[in-house]
Amino acid sequence: MSIATNLLKIKSSLPESVTLVAVSKTKPISDLMEAYDTGQRIFGENKIQEMAEKWEAMPKDIQWHMIGHVQTNKVKFMAEFVSLIHGVDSLKLLAEINKQAKKNNRTIDCLLQIHIAKEETKFGLDEKELNEIIASSVFKEMNNIQIVGLMGMATFTENQEQIKKEFTHLKSIFDKLRSKDKPQCVSTLSMGMSGDYQLAIDCGSTMIRIGSSIFGGR
Ligand SMILES: *Cc1c(COP(=O)(O)O)cnc(C)c1O
Image 1: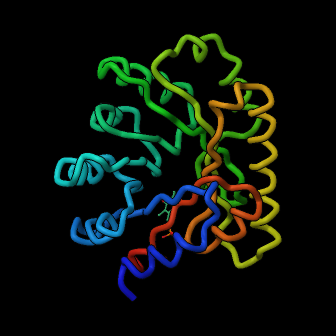
Image 2: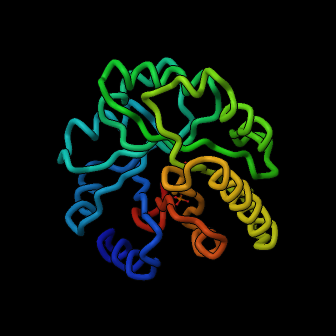
């Protein structure tokens, strides 16, 4: 099936409260333009260099989301245009994003990544580390970033109960954060990919990141 068909099919099945990020990593601009032409305006990439090249080449009304792990020394290459950074997992990285956002005279929206999977290899904070960041005075003085929510990735498994447990755990951390922080700012829960987005939505996701179900395998 074509990219346009895949996209429209997924979009029509989503509740209005759920935002779709079209994950276009490794795909050529012609593929992204096919999605763009059906109305898609939010694209997710996991490499800063690749995202910057696509940003330069493509229409300027696209919102670019960085969904991959971010190296501190590369933040400067996306600070001018990135719309949302999903995978923020340290105070050091927040400080760099804040610094580069300030240089560009803007505020950058971020999600803090929470480690919910069993795999040690996946990145992210635990609940205690999250709370330490939020409570720190250094963080409170960062005026050019806005934490708008949380992001997480479930274990890569066929076990639906396991995935459900992990998504539910993330949702509960999200709800606690909202009750502490200004709930109007903390509004985004980024969870769910091609294989598990329906379950993620059932568990309270507000933003799904879908690649292969739109653009095909990588
Ligand atoms: C690649 C990627 C996705 C999309 O994965 P699909 O299984 O192709 O939908 C979502 N989130 C992150 C963080 C990714 O790196």
